[in-house]
Image (tube, rainbow, N blue to C red):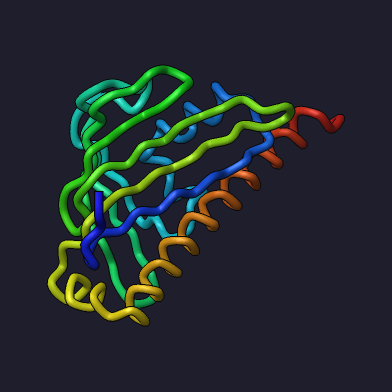
Length: 166
């Protein structure tokens, strides 16, 4: 598949010091993202439960960067518990996002493959300009890095509370 200039494909791989079921449930509880994921301003679950993950769960996201705000909705299309979650996206971003999970020694790997097209006319036009496209990619990577750090910090604090004497 060849990408048009307003199409983006990002792959982010996180390694979190926690067991896979914990990370699965944390990634599945999308309404809590703003509490640990900087840049995700708001998530509203519109239909369906967050947990357990269910086909048909529909959520609305508001994501902010220094230069723009994006709003989009996701719909869970398919999942295999503990292995992957695939959702479609519509709104300012349209396409698909797939989380895949793997237990590693002492950590969980959570990979997010995001294949989207930008919708807002200004961003669509800017995506044809190499420097602007690079800035958009930078802000996506920055958002994902912040999410990984937030989740690592969340589980580091949880781990310390469980392991240290009171």
